[in-house]
Image (cartoon, rainbow, N blue to C red; front, side, top):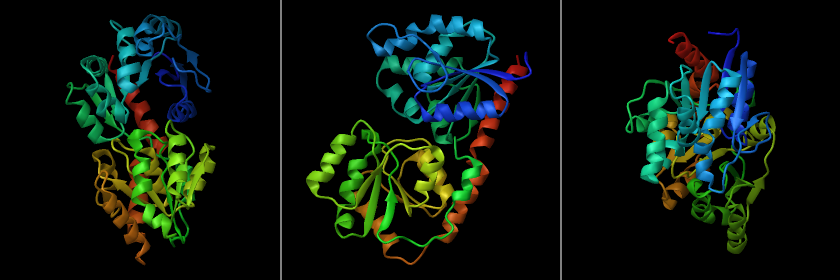
Length: 356
């Protein structure tokens, strides 16, 4: 390595909380990091210029500027998050360069984007082909990526939860009355929150459950109108809050619920398992990879009766699922600790540099 500290250029959406958290941990683990982003966020980052009115072309048109930034910053490695955007951009900027490229995959990156058009698929394939290493948060996502192209070096590491927040794991496993259910996914079509509301409407009406949703997402206003028009009671919302406060808030609930139509290895699920909530989730591969053999409850996508029956089973049983909660915590401690997983990514980057 050229320098005492590993010098990393991270490419990603500077508005993303995951990027913000990742950046802080890289620095805590003695890395020198610069984030470059087209999107305008709140963290300390290098702003890549927007060019022209067509947003989809901004990444392609920023290749030259990125190449100039690489020459000035002289990173040991470029770490691009999201293959079709920043991964594709980095692949163009690093052409004929000896600097290794790591591409971090996200769920929709592989599960949705490449299927939009031939051009989208081509961008993803180029990023994956040029990457010296590809990191995914689930084996399922990595397997799906390898259907497009044979990958070089790979690593499966979820983002996970910070070790210090394991202390928020529930001290008491008794259930609230009504049962407190949190659905911590923003109001977007892919997260299917309206389905949750309608499927559990009868339990809401009976006062058996209380539902908590985030107050944000592009469909949040429509969702609130839906609640008002249907006359649902027992539904509350939370605004964005600091990480520690948010995890303490999550720990106050009994059940974590996700009805996502597509996902990889959701951080929110890992957090819920770490905190001692009972996970209830739609059966999709990335989620099942985490809750397989744990005793968690699942239901088929858009199966309203299946979801309602799962919740009724919790409400009408005295089983506090103590062993399931302990197994979930053990699984998180083994594979879902954020600091350990970032350290594994740093080791991967060092291996790439030594191999040059």
